[in-house]
Image (cartoon, rainbow, N blue to C red; front, top):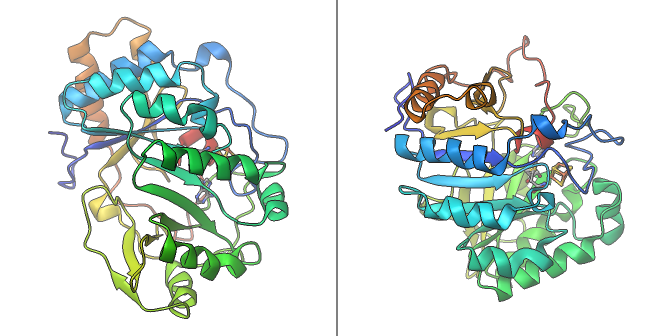
Length: 327
Ligand code: SAM
Ligand code: SF4
């Protein structure tokens, strides 16, 4: 078992497959995009599998594939299939912007994936184009329908709540769960990346989001299941779906954080908000043994910070953009 210095059991690995993306969301990337990694800097799929296998031997049981946009990476389906076969891995899931989902949903499902998160911050086509700087919402909606047809369950929709941008749609998103068995999860806008448009004015806390929704109906807490992650889950009376609130800023969940992250260029990040990273690629490319790799990962976990320091005056936004970390 991977236990850090604060007695947290680390069982979840998020893998960023690529720093590339087919969108430029205003909260994640600057308009011109980010300086992309050279091909040689990006981990090869075999290297990712080797790290995942070492992590699985150490007790990681769940993996999430993310990016950038993971579905733009060639070989993603084979990778999912291989990760699913690793001894100890119980679940491999995906976070995607949904643009390429309609064409990949069937293959992902037959590779063994069951759970998927789709990012969608508005239901309005024009606003979607503005938030994503050019995206076509129709493709995402088709992706969601296809994922449902293929039997993905639950389908989780991630909404980054931003004042003055999509706060007028929070109630409408919540109403969607009444008829549909979807999970809508509101994420607090986080100050990650030097060029995102985060500031105190655009930030909406989860408690404010909940207040807005309570005008739609009473929210009843849903008992946590192991897979709800950091989201506090609720249900409107009689609703088919659920509502989740992810509050990294207003109510940080560092005490129970069970995750580590692998960036596309092979750096292990033990905290989303800390730029302290361990360069696993360097070891992989100098013929490290499996045992030594496991030791390096175990040692890295010991440097996982107790918690983030966002609310402290000394906090500086992380250097990497969210697209380079994987969310
Ligand atoms: N491209 C995929 C997508 O958009 O779902 C996967 C990568 S994206 C970086 C992962 C998640 O991070 C998305 O749900 C996105 O909305 C979220 N995200 C990105 N920047 C964020 C920010 N500044 N604050 C909160 N969430 C953010
Ligand atoms: Fe791309 Fe996802 Fe970032 Fe949007 S949030 S720019 S889709 S990586």
